[in-house]
Length: 271
Image (cartoon, rainbow, N blue to C red; front, side, top):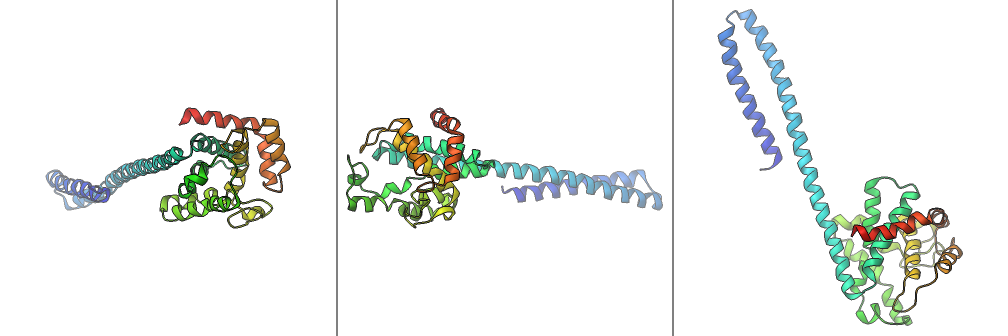
């Protein structure tokens, strides 16, 4: 039964019971018209007080149940997202661990840059997990090719942000998770893709994610390259400040590097 019907039924039942029995009790105890009027007034105010308290707890319970149901629904959505990542991992063996590492590190960087609201951090995490979902539409011959891609293959690979946008735009729950999947290949200098956004035109989440994404890609081996030494990776990120990356985000990344790096390790125990 829907909560609103249940609340109305309980209210009507309690109200009818109160009126029936209270009227009988008052009629037996009081006969004087003046006393009867006074008692009826008191009874009316008591009825308002009792039913107000009753409605408060009934509505509070209904809202708590609705919130619990919503959390279950959100959890099922998050499980679906993780299922998508696993599907992608079946094709692209590097993706899964990379996905959870960069998601955890992006949340850590966002929190160090002043994002403290839990809902906002969760949105950034969800968006980061979905960052490469568009690669579902990239052929295996390109996605898992050993070695560098040629120009035609690179152009095809660069369609994955648009594929992600087309996919997420049709899902109400994920429509607000678009910033990173669609924008993480934009560059601070405007030379990125797919839109060529520049500076703060690029969504905040995409700007901070791009640093973490590049760090992780260089720190770990890929089919087309070996892992870089950590000092070389950090030098590269510094050199790309104000070119590829948001300089403020780069500063925050290095100011809190150990914490952000530790978040990647913590992500394994949370999966």
